[in-house]
Structures are given as C-alpha cells and as structure tokens.
Image (cartoon, rainbow, N blue to C red; front, side, top):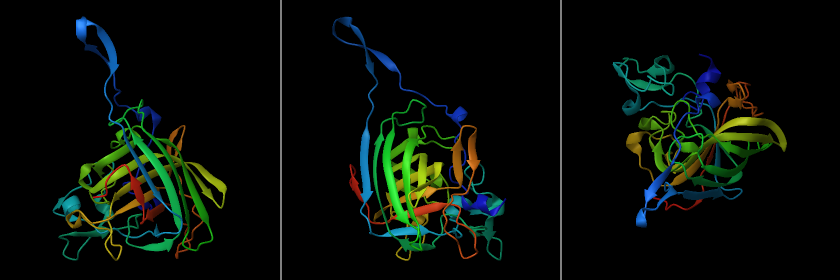
Length: 299
C-alpha cells in the first residue's frame, strides 16, 4: 500500500450515496381521550452545541508521523486485534519490537502523530443533533467555518462546511452529528488510531477549502470533533489507559478523499505546505487548544 494510503488509514474513505441506508422516524397513531386517533410525531431529543475559538489563541498543525499502538486496541502479534474490518489497521502496517512479542507503532506516517507546529487560527461552529441514528432523512445540521495558517505563516486557509453526511458506509455517522457520546478506539466508530474518546460534539461532512482566498477544492471530506483532551503536556497522543485526561480541544481533519457523483475518490489535499522530504503534505489535521463550548458542561 502506498504512502498516501497510510497517511489516512482509518479515516473516512467511502461516502457513496447508494450506501446511504438506515431508518427514518415514522409518524405513529396515538390513542387519546374519547378514543380519537391522531397522528403525532415520535419525540426527538434535539441537542444543540456551539463551539468556537478566538483568533490567535493556541492552534496546532499536526505533521505526519508514526502512531504508537495500544495493546488494548491492537493486541499482540500472537493475538492481534483491530484489523478485521474496513476501519482496521492491517497487520502489515504495524511494527513490532525486536522479540516480535508486541506491536510498537505504525509502519508508515499517519495524521495522528506527536509531531506538530504552532500556528494561528480561529473557528465558529454550531451543531444540532436531532436524528440519533444514521438515516437519509436525518435532520442533523451544522454551520461551521474554520480559519488557520500553515507552519510557515505564508498560507491562510479557510474551511467552510457545505453539508453533513447522514449515513456512514463503514461505521455509524449518527445521522451526521454526534453530541455527548464516545467514538474512536474500541467503539468501532472511526479510526482506532485515536483512543476511545469522550466527545462533546462531532460531525462528518463535505466542505470547501480555500487557500489565500482561492477555492482550491469544493468537495473535501471533513471530520470535526470536540473531545476530552487526548494529548499529554508534551503533546503525546494518549492511549485508552491514560484517559480520561483533563481539558478539551477541537480536531479538524481533512483526509486525502473527496466526494464525487460517482462516489469517493482518493485525492490529496492541495495544502501547498512542503514537508522536509520535499513532498506536499496530503492531509490537514488542525488542533484548536483553547476552545469555548456552549450547551454542554465541560467535564
């Protein structure tokens, strides 16, 4: 498998309209006084959360690098775990210790490394979680816009969400929006390279990417999540046994995948940011570290 594939292993890789199968909330007859039958909509519990960060506060650009492998999630060479499905990490993508008794890290760079550069940026988002499960008729909605620079400070980026994706092809998208739940890690929702993380708000969607006010890609796959802090003081990405960890931050991820009428296509993000190996970084992973949240109490 080529390097670009491993750079997004476990991230959203297929968003085909024909696969959008799920359920919808029916209208149910309800018996009331005098045996009059009326139709009432099944109750829906709407959760609304606003998350933002002001310009110039702590923002990080995550660089490609290996991800250490948690035995609880990935097992051992003698008893491997987390490779069996479409969001799993294949065995050939794992390094082992010299004795061959334990997995140590991914064999190729990923967007979930401990390497980063400090940048500047801001964002505003408002999410509404109405439909709890995947459904083409989902009423979940998001308004979100993100701004940031690259590590050189020479390029200015803007990501504007256009739509949520109401059904996930390989794991649930919760109608497009998840509020007050868990994903990643052992949940079977999202890449296992992230730990099992408490999530204040998350969404999956399609967005437009602008660089220096120029539209460079109008159909990028976007995943955003505001979660408990999953980084140590030295910014090491934590494992399940090291959580919960005090704090909160927001992750913005653009993998090397675009949505097209024919289905998903692999297409590197045109970041215009050159890595030390003279290759253009093919994904974007931004961490906002000083966020404000309304609608949920920070644990």
